[in-house]
Picture (spheres, rainbow, N blue to C red):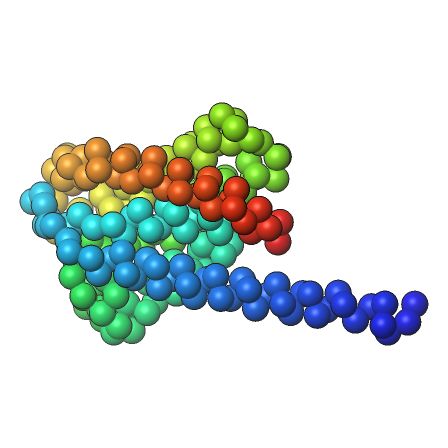
Length: 200
């Protein structure tokens, strides 16, 4: 086999890696932009309502587990090192002590779970109602995991009892369920427009 026959494969691999890195960076920035939109603090712990979770769900369903996890991790690390990318323009390691930090930390495993389940459905070549249902299950699984982290964060940093933390988290559930549904429709549209996204 000649070198001319083998050279296209590593070139394609490098190109794919470059596209993946670009997607990770773009979606990390997308999460940051959604987090910086005006937030409404609610509940006893004053955890803000933002479009941040919508961005997390869209990122996970669109990029899959690995790339979404890297994008969300990049976003969280950027905030922790001081960039003002968290809700309300906050940033810095001091946010570790905030009541909402549990949610921020939960975004990472939540993205991994949602993205992995979504791409498992795509690999099974589901379509139509089957794919829609699989995406709904995937995003709800990630939502539930993020809630667990969020409740734990409020118990730790806001010193709430379990019942009070759960009650505080319930305030966000209706809005987050709407975000989950919106994210599913957006991600399905993206995959229809760019089917190659799930092939790498």
